[in-house]
Image (cartoon, rainbow, N blue to C red; front, side, top):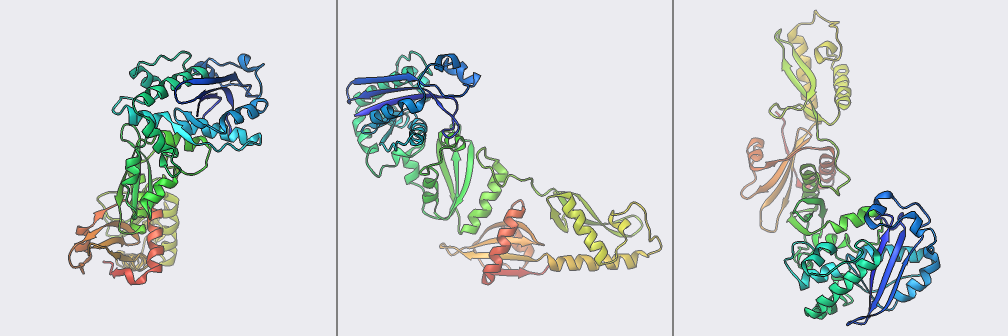
Length: 442
């Protein structure tokens, strides 16, 4: 027995939205034998854009029953049948949440007609209910109303069954089947092909654009965990429905995956990644010699082709560091662009430059250069390089590990530096000193 369900709501979030209409059509596998349909008073104003989409207004629901008044009847209609809907997790999550608030625990098997249609009618241009019905010549009366959409879903289910879909339905309803919790537009085969190894995974939308990047010790296990949670929030629901494919890159270690994830988030700026979207390093500490012969220190915007003594995300951070260096080595603040007036005009360039060089040498000692290495199963050496306290890049060394820094750098792919990557490599190096190779700064 199936219950084909459709609901209309005040919004996409089960925890803050309310149901305005519900239709339940009980189906015995060949025909509908019972229909339940009613408007529901959401006990709150219906947003104008929802009224524009569905045609359901505040006036229409004013005399309708509240959800708690019909919750018992809805629960008993659904509790012993298979819950069927187009993008089933949305309707099911909404009803489960609101029934639970009324004291009823809905725990039904689910069927998604989006996933069923993809199996029964592959290669159609779209599997949204309206476009799918257009492709299959199914008429929809009262589009975006619960009854109209539910009756169209019944016709869709009948076509799927006639197309030999009972085998698909049987597979989906098995206890351990992932079809019940997977996103409606994601092919189960893609999950089965994921490796159980460290790496970075990418969720892609309908057009192939990356909408989320994540890292994992076990890619398959982590990807599955995104879909088996109980989060009813709108962010998760919107996230799930936009996933059409998953791709991945395997990594040597969890640290490799962590660094790659961070750089990929910065590169791709995915819609559903909310952390690690801080600005890139924007300033650097530079040295140069002016036309009088004084070697000077300055904080300036990051320059791609000019090596910095150190890099900063914020101008204030750099100015604080420069002022500390100036005080520690008794540097002329004017020659460090910390003061507008030169209060020590009589100091000779040689004396000033010696103090500048001492400050730079001390900074070099505080900003180490080292490689973190890991042996891979393929007998290669994976390497991450910290140069002068900043992340330089990473890559694989196939032959003997080079002794010289410049040779090593030529073998690695440069990556953008940021605080998150840098701090994680620092911590890893402290915990694994046997995997660290130090280089002398020049």
